[in-house]
Image (cartoon, rainbow, N blue to C red):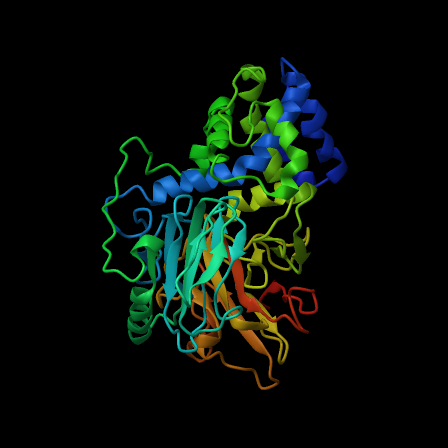
Length: 477
């Protein structure tokens, strides 16, 4: 019987057997190749290494390919200001949140610095992570790090040297590409929406040459050749090996590798990618390089079971290795593929759960059942910012429900049991008027859960060191 590579990967992934998986790409799949095996090995390493940078660039193109700010997109150097939480009809991105309103934008600091002004948040929780082209969060002004007072920063590029205005703090980006992912906490009431909108409008980004002047951003240029419908991940994965490495080489001219990346650079050179130079298509067999993307992406996704830095607790899966990756290229690529824009763990941890009870005996959540998440007295999720439990359908989108509640948290004024414990009721139908404050509505069919902890408690108890354990979600009696 002939076994396809796809079925092999799926079967091995289901087994979760690390020893078997370590060889599937290293040897078994190589037999399918014609050409130089060492070029193929180097290509896979180079692909995984460059995956975040290529994905960031493709994301930037799509998110900025408009003439003026609209909905979730804005030209380079302009902010998108999300004015409300998405509802169940929203399909732009998976796993949306209903806790913070985004103020996001892209800038190119290769030519000159850009100045970010953040207003006085008056004690309101916020964070404004800055991601470089490699998806590392290189700075994160916000409640945890800089407080909630007004603040101004100049984001400078890798080679910039100059003088900044008084009172402007320099944040040096390792790359020319910078993605600003501002989040401001909001309860979602009409009054709080208005208050956060006023704060969003005071968030400004301008080039240093326009600092202190009456500056109007120029209109953007929409490129009709850019695919605005296909998911970015699919666009990246559809690139041939030659096109992928050609783009990677071009991006490396303004988004240089870190000093710690020196050991991997010879592998990139082996397939024609040298920082600062054009791609050399004669360095390796094109037929070999064009086989790299699909197999390399499979290897990225297999990192979930073969070596990903993920913790499994009571049916929940999460990582505290996000936002800053060093030379852990596989983890960086995996997070890029499944959660682009992830925060540092000190700012947010995002446990996911797809099965009740956890472990191999757990069953996938289904709205035909009723579930309870039970918190012992004094052991609600320890977060200095906020926590929430969000309901998603099997495709990671919000679930329509009669009370328009997509997540549940302390802002619902949760009812406490007589013994001080707290129960959250996760089910399709209302648990009754006396329990509705603690109800997270579920769809009739399959669903999954995400627990968000923003600014997780750094001291005991804490999810960061495992001294606080997430309780399981169990089928109600």
